[in-house]
Image 1: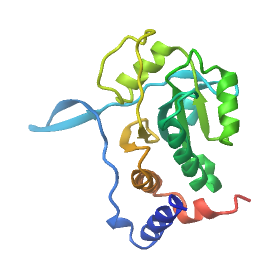
Image 2 (image 1 turned 90 degrees about the horizontal axis):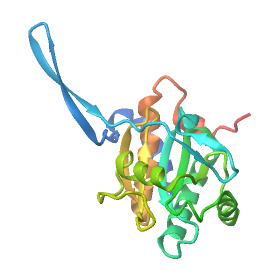
Image 3 (image 1 turned 90 degrees about the vertical axis):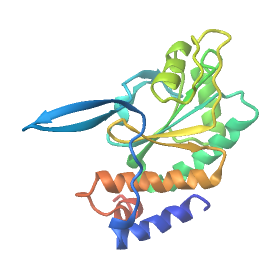
Length: 227
């Protein structure tokens, strides 16, 4: 309910006053291009776009970033043996999954293991079963450690310290990263803070409205029976 209440509040605002809702900005500027046309100079900021990648989910399937095309993505980092922050992060993401349960096509959660050598497919499946994670729109992902750590540092920017993904390298973060349908970073959120998680859910709803103005209203899509 802590997640659903602010989402419902946003939907009411959206339904009656679309022009007063703040749209999350684009983050992580890579460069500024100078454009000269008809004697006029303008500047265009080019933002970082997440590259495609391939990892293995809790069902043993090879999945790609592009497989979630058309959805807003929530990216998190965890490991199954984590005794402290990961259970809380997972519980909060479970609440987010429940918030979008009637429209699973809206959101894809990607939880990348930072201990992929121990987090085998079998370990991920056991963890998923423990938290009743629905694989339709939530993948627990494992793969090559160097690749995952490179993604964390240079694609999702959740760690400022450099490393080589070797045996002594370790990343642990409470951040949730929201990626829009076009693979641009649109927000960072503290996954341990329920207020920030509520803000994330509202921002995701806003991003769907902003990108889908020609589609039926979000209220209808979220709460339709799906028949």
